[in-house]
Length: 93
Image (cartoon, rainbow, N blue to C red):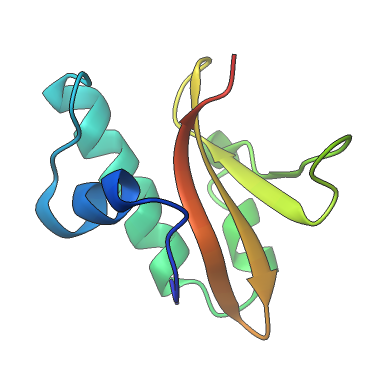
């Protein structure tokens, strides 16, 4: 379950389906991925479907994970005790 968001824009996107400067199709895909994240009980639940491209981030963010929306955009988050924290919809490039 999603417990916290990293910023107000990601929170608004999840709750209202809107995000400034992002087209409607991309916003819908992001909300769908956040719905999957919200429904996950175990971190391993996010490995499926494989199109999630679920991965642990390395480098500056070794405690964060991500689910890919497309080549440019991701949902990143921290995972603790079956919950997602600091969820962020971000341009990863």
